[in-house]
Image (cartoon, rainbow, N blue to C red; front, top):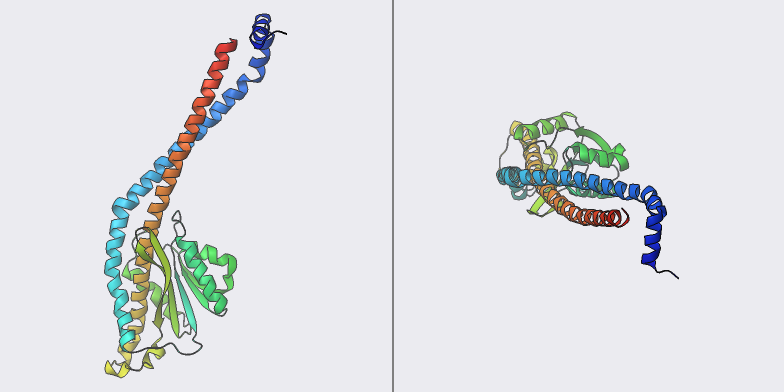
Length: 290
């Protein structure tokens, strides 16, 4: 019985082993190397993109969005204190209108999905509730499950830091629609830290509910002022909610791009090892049988 080395030597001299191996195995190794090389190139390009997006979100957008959020919080707290001091209360079985704060952009983790999940739970409790959606992302998600509850939507939201004029225009359109409501629940993301956020609700009361407040007489507000206060209160609430949601989105996008970059680097490392092994194997066989 000839050992393996002698059999290989005989086959190699006769040319039988060389021909069969070259024809059947060489293309397979070359194809595998090309596939790995192509994947490596694609992953490296993706890693460059995600790293750039993370850098932009970290250094510029996150700083600006947080500064804008701190300023906008003053607007949101002003009307809340008014309702607290006047002891405004929600009536029994109120007609509630829901305003969902989202944006048109993705690649930001679960920012939009958390908002839509909370909205769907609220609609389960109040099937007759009507929804106004700010941003295409939440609109697309809610349209799959509760399209009949959506009565109005606004796009081109979240491209940049929201302005008060945008919120004022949205509030004006809502009040112009003549939809009857006792309260408006604004659903948005509240930034807890640079890596966490939670969906919460900010409530705005209608003019009639505010008139029925226990301590409303203390302010001695005239009717025309009260009418203007209604729109201003809604606009400030929407503005504050949109700005904070925008800050959450930028923070979540930065974290998502950071995770994507880390995952890409891990994949590059694994594919590079696989590529080097394949090259060593192919080089070994070429040297052995040629």
